[in-house]
Amino acid sequence: MEFFVRAPEAYLLEFVKRMVPLVRDAVSTLLSSSRDGSDSVRAVGIVLDMFCVPLMDVGNELCLPSYIFLTCSAGFLSLAKHIPERHLRVKSGFDRSSGEEENTVPGYVASVPTKVLPLGLLTSESYDAWVDMTGRFHEAKGILVNSSIAIEPNAFGYFDRIPVNEYPPVYPVGPILCFNDRPILDPLERDRVMTWLDEQPESSVVFLCFGSLKNLAATQVKEIAQALEIVGCRFLWSIRTNPKEYPNPFEILPDGFMNRVSGLGFVCGWAPQVEILAHKAIGGFVSHCGWNSILESLRFGVPIATWPMYAEQQLNAFTMVKELGLALEMRLDYVLADGEIVKADEIARAVRSLMEGEDVPRGKLKEIAEAAKEAMMDGGSSFVAIERFIDEVVVSAMDCSKSREY
Image (cartoon, rainbow, N blue to C red; front, side):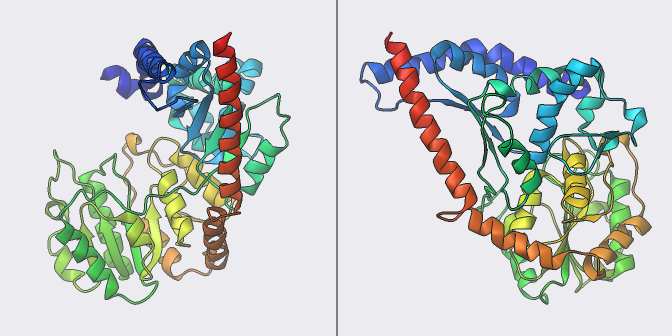
């Protein structure tokens, strides 16, 4: 566990490497079953998460093409391509102390400051894992990205210009969204949330939600509550409970808070995020900038105020604000693990700007929402990319089948 906390990327890669023999045995059994006719399922390729690139060894050994499904942005893929190329020249990692230093990353129009890079790139142990992991991306037969040309034209345009023999083809297959959130709370609670939203005026509610993996400190929760009182706008706030500090979200709120915001605010634990963002009452989203959350907000044209916390969320926030001009900057380089408490006044300014400010690109967001929807329809750019990917799998499967026969 200490290794995971210290260097999570290195831990995950090492774990997957240890699983290679087990996966090889499982895939070999599947191939044998399909050859002798005992199983109608035919394996034609392996689709991997980026942390599972060591499993490409299984594909190579068994003559199965390997593909990467990237649940991050095309901008992140640009960085992933840049990391091993930079390492060949520089031979050292990035220095977090030089946070304002700007990096030229092909695929980005804006220079990318070191302070918004994934935190793992800024520590030596995890940096080596990043170089190892991203250095194998070029071995894939193709890379599927959960984004669309409409959302990230510059990044996808960059990959389109790369010669086919220098990097795998990149398929923009998104936005892939889950419209049926897994019901992990009582359906009655979901109904309470949605009924309250139904009673609110159009575009009047700010939604605050910071993902399902990390908890905010109790002190930070109180600062957010104070900010919402300062602004005085309607809000829906999903608080992920902390079993050690506050198993019940209402226990940690300031005394009398719910009475003072009665009629304006709704506080809950888990919330059906996609359904909420699709609701006409939502006018803004204060988000940790996980890529899925960004895609969901873009799909429904909801403006975001950026408050990244961990993983690649700082890069996502930078991409949305500086590269694409699709979000309002609250923070770009906030790191939850640093323990900084963002004060109520700063949060209040961001919420007020998000809900009332003239700089929010609402018109542009509506255009992106429509384009993202069309991308997934028959004939849309992502639909066509999925068709191209299927064609590639079929051709590669035939080639591999012939190779196994000899």
